[in-house]
Image 1: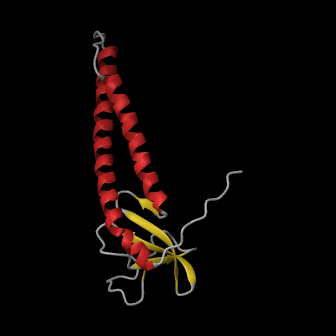
Image 2: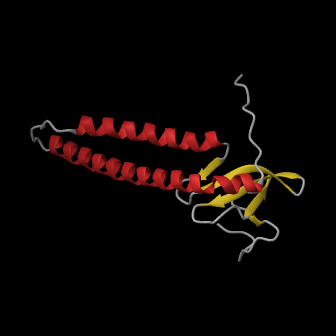
Image 3: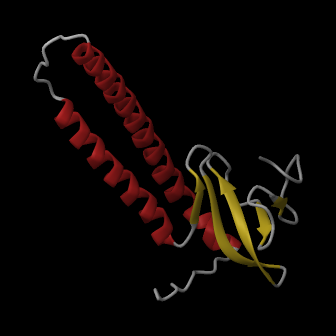
Length: 150
């Protein structure tokens, strides 16, 4: 059985202090993911064209498909390292697209998840431990338009 890793518990101030670093990491991660997606789509379409050419009797040409596949595999490994780097800080990356991150924390004497999204100036929401992932409750004294946001 794998030993459970002790999870870091953040104060709001500690979570806020990580926001600039997380912004940088998430923007970089999203750029890499977009590049990966473009490369993947291009290779997939290339393979479809090659398959159609073969099925129609055209001779197979040597191309750089293998090199492209290798580059794609390396990109996947880089994405995995970047994601693991965010988890290594002690927070949880919940959604790359929205840049949704949570931090285990203490608020009003109970264990909660502080939540932050890319573009927000700091941590202004939390959710209860048994709450749904996208239930975001405003922290007391924080200005917000909605009680829940998605």
